[in-house]
Image 1 (cartoon, rainbow over the protein chains, first blue to last red):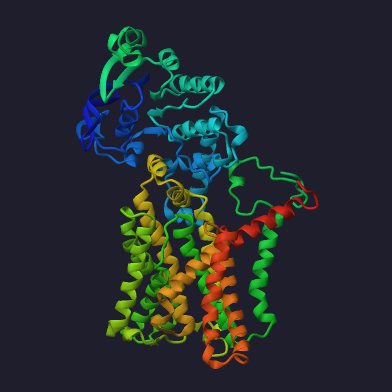
Image 2: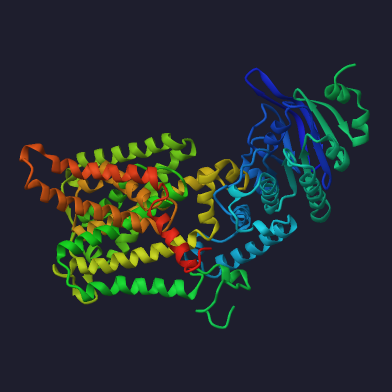
Length: 253
Length: 364
């Protein structure tokens, strides 16, 4: 049974079909990549899964829960978190606060506990801090712990973005072009993190990425989108042989 | 931790619990304690006239109201132009009790702490209802929605005979353990009560900001799309922010009713709403200490302008009417100057001063 079932999803804005009849199965514990040329509908697909868009028709199931019409916070409370392509960090806050924020749903104490900050609230916040420190350690963000996110370099901000999504302790992590605009070294870093996330933490990763070299190297399964349609799916080897994919990327000869 | 906490050159925390402390160093804590002691002690040392004491009570009430406004506008980023109406809701909660059970009823005179809390809760209720448009509206549109609440409030008060058409509804003198609070002690007594309220609520906000309930406000302000993806319900958070602000305003309103021993609509007009907003901006939006600086600065300015226009009135021809124009003029000027030169408010000066003294005598 697939973790995430995307059944016949169509998303249209007026006359434009961003996605048409897309079927995908995201298997647990694997890295599934979605690739395609610009405007193929990759980010739209992620937006549909994470609740920012709702499909015009078709359904999305997570395990046996339907999340076709769920709002983003409901989706993330079910255990699906995402990192944004265009940085959507809380830029006026420190890295630490950004990550602490993401633990919102995991902190269970009442408003009164919070106002008086005794017992439960204090204890849970200390545990929260401990957990976040684990993520900071994992993502190698120690030097930036207390710096304002807005002042950090782009590469580090991208890392914080991934770290924040990871802090939600999700089952499925949606990464929207985590390597866009990075140099070779930073890319290698992120690839290492993505693989660690899957192997060490056992989190299912859905990766949207332009860098074909990276995608071919680390993916277990690839879906290729073009003009909102799935034109190919399978292992990296199968994709590399798929004539339709080659056509979409290189053009006809 | 170093052996002597007074000589420590930094914070050497060994547990995450230590990091949660409100005051990070002993020096911070003792300065704050000293400040509180001064606040509590000075009325005992200096003789103040009733008139001056009223001004100070007034400032403290504004502090309570502005703390609430700062939560919704400063921390949650939702502009509210109806804050005086929420203060009015609190005041008129007390007033409606006075109208129904009599202004010298034991509930009004003996159980006034209860009345203050009830007013706060009623304010919170109204805040939540007025906050509902925040589920759909953003920015300026939301501000207009709060403005409409201000208008509705004024209209209802002015036309409802239950509220005496906005004319003063009197509130009885309260009792303390020592007996009835008399005319001479009235403002003196309320100074202490309001001070205690300010300190309690201030620590409440301080604590709240360390928890998920405070962080969600800031998250919604900075980026509500991301807040949504982080598992917060932005709509609900905004409504909750308005409810919080309503609570503070309600408490401030009840205090206002008791201090003035009467409730009239002119204290809760749009003009006052703008005034609260100005105090929040001048003090520093999104800071806790800004809620203290703002009211002090604006009320002090008000007072000085009054003196100045009185003095100038003697030299200018009475037909010129410059003196009445001067108060709103300086008020507007101060806000504009702050928005241009110090949008982060007086709280920023405080921050700069603090970081300077931290390093002194070294430059960096």
